[in-house]
Image 1 (tube, helix red, strand yellow):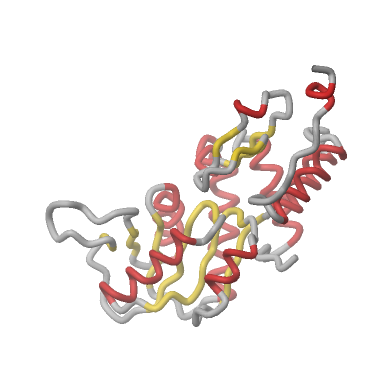
Image 2 (cartoon, rainbow, N blue to C red):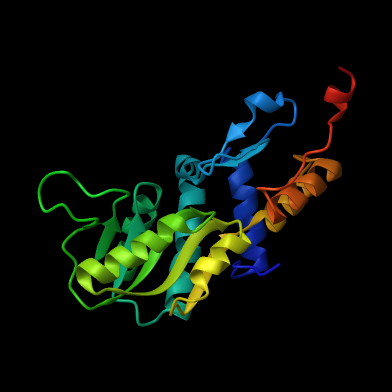
Length: 231
C-alpha cells in the first residue's frame, strides 16, 4: 500500500488522539442498515470525524504542530495556507498564524451573491500554497480546490496535508498526474487499526476485516458477523 503518513510514530499518536476524542467511531453491534453512511454513499461499521479533535486543546495543538512541521520541512516555499470548507478551515487558520502566512479557504460551492468565487479571502495572485483538510477519501474535493485556486488566482498547489488519508487507489489516480511536490497525512487506517487493537478498542478479527475493507471499500463483501449468524 502506498502511504501518505509522514512519520509512523506521529501516525500512531494521531490515531490514539482520534480514538480518545471520539473522532474515530467503530461499532460492529449495529445492524447493517444502521451502519455509518459515508459521503461516498458507502455504509460501514466505521466512520471518522476529525472535527471532534477540536474538543481537546491538546489534540488540536498536537496535530497543528505536526502539520506545521511538515510544511516547514517539505514545503519551505509556501506563501499561503489554504483550508477546505468547512472542516479544514480551523486547521488552516491556526497553522497560518503559527507560520505568519496569509490564509485563504475554498468553498464547496460558489456563493450565489457577491463576487461568486470558490476561493475566499482575496489572496495574492500567482503564489504557492499548501492545502489543508481534515480527511482525504476519494480526493474529489481536493482536486476541485486545486483547480479553483489555479483558475481564479493562479495559485500553485505545492502539496496536500490532511489529518488522515485512506490512501484509496482512486485518489492516487487523480493526484499522480498533477505537478504536486507531496501528499502527506498525519495518520491512516493501518495506524488506526494497530492502535485500536493495542489499546483494546478493536478485536484483531474486526481490525483484519476493516483492513480488507479499506483496501477496496466499494467492492468489499462483509462476512456474516456472529450476531447475524444467530438469526
